[in-house]
Length: 177
Image (cartoon, one colour):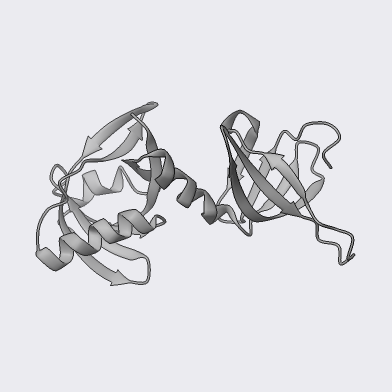
């Protein structure tokens, strides 16, 4: 099963177990929009990790709040106490390889830092080569000769990911920066 992050559970909403999501995936936003328009449940499960394992949840009610904020009700969460247990967790959905690459475009603008704390630059683009995904990193200098570098992107190279501060700490192969 190939899961990709699609939203973050921001907070509880009301006392009946509703949850406010911050949606990060265009595909997931479109699915929620379709459910709201047709007044139907989301047929596909979404997943929340507990103890390292993905647990499926089904969304029953969907309401668009504003921007990327959605209010949802899960079929198995009916009170504020159970809703509070999932606050702050990421929400995942099944996706194909193509959807994962689109979601990687959300990394554009993130600062890349090596394991020693040296800033490599800012992600300007995500490029897919056959069997390899690369990040184009532009340095923060204003020199005309700076075309940026290509950095291989693999989960084994990512040491930490800070969404709030838009920073990724990576193990960068020697000689690239």
